[in-house]
Image 1 (cartoon, one colour):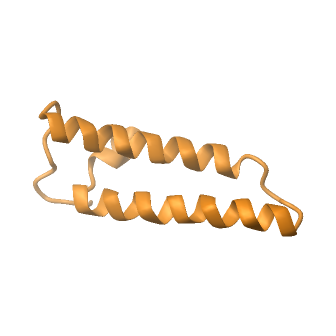
Image 2: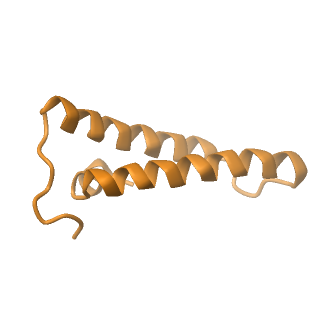
Image 3: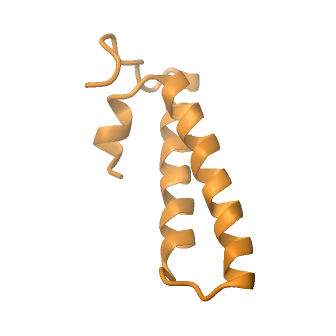
Length: 73
């Protein structure tokens, strides 16, 4: 997920995406304890995606970036 793509989405959509990704990371951790992990870099990539989204949300909060008018393209 690229920052340019993230900035095109609305804040509400981004908050929902953060919740979804956080849940996936949580479930993946437990699955890794009981099963063999197939994608070893999943947790790291997903946590970084969450950080990118949170950065964009924080920029919008402080007024450094504007919310897109048309929403998701």
